[in-house]
Image (tube, rainbow, N blue to C red):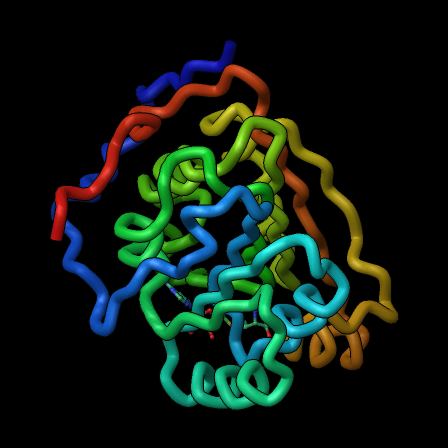
Amino acid sequence: MTTLSHRHNRAFLPEKLLLPRDFFVPEVMATKTPLALEIGAGRGKHALSFAKAHPDCHLIAIERTKNKFMAFEKLALQSSFPNLTAIHADAIAWTVFALPPKRLSKIFILYPNPEQKNPNQQWLNMPFFEFLLSRLQAGGEIILASNIEAYIDNGEAQAREVWQLQVERSSVPSDSQRTHFEVKYLARGEPCWELMMTKPIGYKTRFDDWLPKEN
Ligand SMILES: C[S@@+](CC[C@H](N)C(=O)[O-])C[C@H]1O[C@@H](n2cnc3c(N)ncnc32)[C@H](O)[C@@H]1O
């Protein structure tokens, strides 16, 4: 059994967050359909191709920036995959209010903002990461990609030492085209890396029984 040592972690306070505007819980949440989450989906290139390639898995793809979300929403409406939900929200607040514990089989964080001047905002440095882990099933995976080697180095160290996850690090193939940022970086000849982190069986967090109060 893995029980997190909380020595390094400031606690995340989900009760302080406000309900996102126009919030709704997608119907898929109450079903047994496998569920994946994408944080920072941009214009939705990965979300659309994932939904097409994995009809048995429902993807909830969240983007905070309005113009990017509008471009994504337009494509999502045109393609109308029944297994894709596009959400315009901050992924932190949305996750807190919408996702029950251990519901997700996969989480994608592809080319997150580098936050080099504000490393506290890198996903694996945030107290929220513990909450996110509580929403992942045992054996579920988090896939993180970046063109910033220092982001991947720090993410790998945090994943192993603080979050006690199984981690595989790899190079993104030069012909990969999952997202707009990936296409841009690889076309410039920049190397990109990926971490695949797996939640061990028996893993415990402080949020395993936490649910939001009725709104
Ligand atoms: C560098 S872009 C990458 C977009 C896309 N994944 C790609 O690779 O083309 C990072 C995206 O994450 C979004 N983002 C950052 N923090 C977010 C949050 N808390 N909730 C939702 N989206 C977020 C930003 O708005 C931005 O569109």
